[in-house]
Length: 193
Image (tube, rainbow, N blue to C red):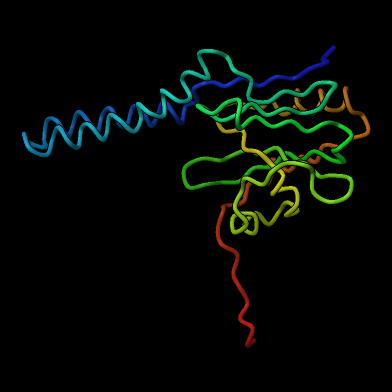
């Protein structure tokens, strides 16, 4: 019987792809760029994926928890390297519904976990800018504002939903992961018709 769900950080295929692309670009820059430009461009190409791997690699190697569902509520592990400072927790009495939704970005699809509170938005600090909230049209704006990305750790949708139903049977899970619209600015209407 599932009484807790945990999703731990891991180094994703996207991160490995960025690291590989950076290493290839850096090597090409060294070979083709000449003695003046090559090392400088190569350093930039090696530094960008190296930084990403250093940040998320540590969280993955230490098996830090990215998302936990238990009898107390839902906890989000923080973002590397500020894990403790950026961790969030929402207790079950503050949640009236849990939303799972996806947004298609340029190169990948990002999954989010959002919350609806009993009287308005859930008690989570808004980390998504207001202009981005308005672009995610298939989810209520209050839920998008009270949501967190699952970037860095995979979410097993079925196990997550089962854990929520087990520890908080009165809290519905609204699964919108089948819809993943492209994140594009919504057309604005002219006030002049």
